[in-house]
Length: 431
Ligand SMILES: Cc1ncc(COP(=O)(O)O)c(C=O)c1O
Image (tube, rainbow, N blue to C red):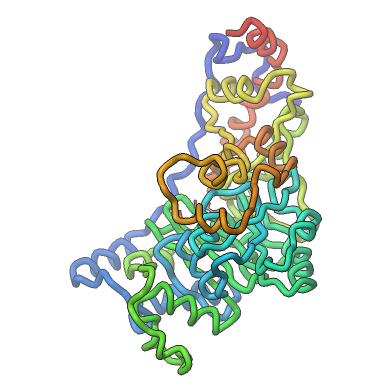
């Protein structure tokens, strides 16, 4: 079935574009929330040190309840939240953390910022998610943790990762920054780890302006993370452990959540389940409208695994299309589709990690990496390279259910699909 109005010339070749298909603006804040923020500003209430501040308490308690995890520490960013996870779990100099080579850099920099050593396993080439089958061969006597990332809102295989961690006495960290509300085996991500970090910056599913949170089922992790990252270690909150009191000081990272963002988070939390369902419904419409398009394919997910679609990821099939991904992207861009390849290259190839050859500005982790002797040049992750080469992403702020709008989006892909012959010729001519 071809809904493109077939026969029309590609915009890249001089035809009329199918045109952009506008998503909703995201995040949106209702007037009552804007009033609450204005009120905070009018009263000069711009700092919240701990749960004694009503807005901080409300946000942290609501998030903990929604996540289904006992402890939540609000933070200034997603990176801060992940850094809190590592500090709360006392992962430090020389400890190895097995992680994914296919993610946003902050999933890795939180390890580097504790002088620990990221060790990269490989991913499933279809989803880009950490492949549990590649983890165990990376375990050494120095391994302390596995850090999994739910990239693009897809849930990583946390049950398999947890089983490996248990076998080797490792802790588990989840990076759910792109996946608030995603389910693995019908259980929310963020509930499998010893600690999990989430970003709530403006582009995320649970969006504020700039914020994040750590959730953990372990009280000790909550307090130790607060000791390193929050004003006076939140020692004034009830339950702060007596044996930590002597270490309370201001030698901290300033990772506080502001009351303004706390108010925004509490408000967004009330909408997120409905918004996630809206995104999911529109993905279902899109997949239906794309049935028959062979040059871009969707990943498949196990029963009980339910992504939330911060972005929609697909995989380009050059062997079907007969053109390069760049040409395919150029054709879609010309039609007005906002599509891109999110991860530019596997993280172990990044220059700032390769201390043997690095000549740029000084970075704090070079010495730790040198001392560990880690050599990323030999740490192979072929599936991450495959995913990088084939991946196609779209931001997916399609929340209101609107099948007609989604069909217009699919029509651009159909148009390219039906004009692959002309596109091949265009590429061959080197146009
Ligand atoms: C997977 C992942 N981890 C961590 C982060 C860091 O979050 P933030 O930008 O809030 O520090 C991001 C943000 O883009 C992310 O996508």
